[in-house]
Length: 193
Image (tube, rainbow, N blue to C red; front, side, top):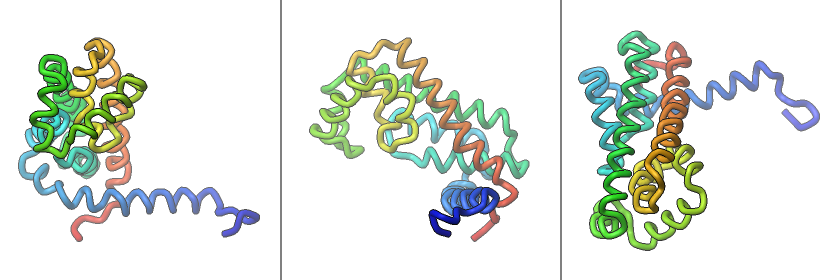
């Protein structure tokens, strides 16, 4: 294909779908066995812990695998999506509370255990202060921002109501985007290796 002869729309859509399948298939393979075994308990637990920022857990992989398994009839679609949104949001709320309550000294003291050095923290704090709500909503799609945004928002003194609104909206879009994509493509994604 050349700029003078673009790819037909149907072929473009097929290429995009193929790209996404190639991208999400390894994510599904990584965590689907855990979800298949433990179901929504694993989904909620891992997303809550990840969004608390305690560990860099496979949040996207969990949401993608849950969408895939829901598309295949293994997990219930609506309860899976709602559970993922609630766990993601509540984990971030707890991180905000910790950031608000203990702030900068807490993150500097314990952040090193998850790779948050003082220079990284200062850079994140400046960026957050400047772009606040957009960082909270859009940060769901950026690792490690997803895991750290609650702490940064709390220590940057973002009001909880604003944080809760933007965090919830970001969680809804994040879960529906990743989980919905896997749900929609579930029949086209190969099972196994």
